[in-house]
Length: 243
Image (cartoon, rainbow, N blue to C red; front, side, top):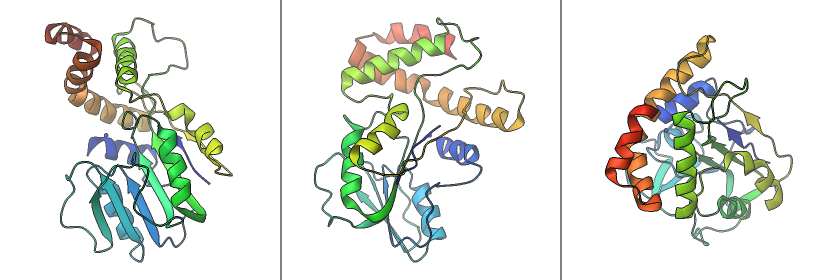
């Protein structure tokens, strides 16, 4: 079973609010071994370790940016989930979790298939992803909206780099193709700024806007220059319109 969810610590706080303070949606009761892939700052793993003190929580990432003061049952490892062998016995984990790993893997399906291999029968795997391209459900988003165009350029650059961003809408099918059963999907709205009248969505939009603005220049410079061949001046020209 899996609960793929669409939806970075600003990222973490925003998704926590979007999920009404939940960290997971799988029906966990008494898990013994938990794996968090791409843990980042490790905040999710730390909170899960506190919630399930009898579980061993392993959290992996390529960067050693996690804190040293953590619950005794939480362990961080430098590891790459794209590797074929996770150096663990099959059917080892009760629960495997991923969150916002778009652009991290050449093929996310490989991670899902390996997850199934390392899950115990009856175990759960859950992925929480954002959709990289903004959507609009009332037809008022123009096709030349700068942020939409920026998103398209980002998707194009990521494809050229072999690290696609648009994976959220594929997760349910990929889990089913891998062999998971009773696959569940939930979609959450995440505004890109605080325009909504609904107070909850307004709060989420404000948080996500801060996150987007903080990462806009760095993301654009790295990806657009390397993969699209844009100059620094060309990138700097489009940034003000997007902001």
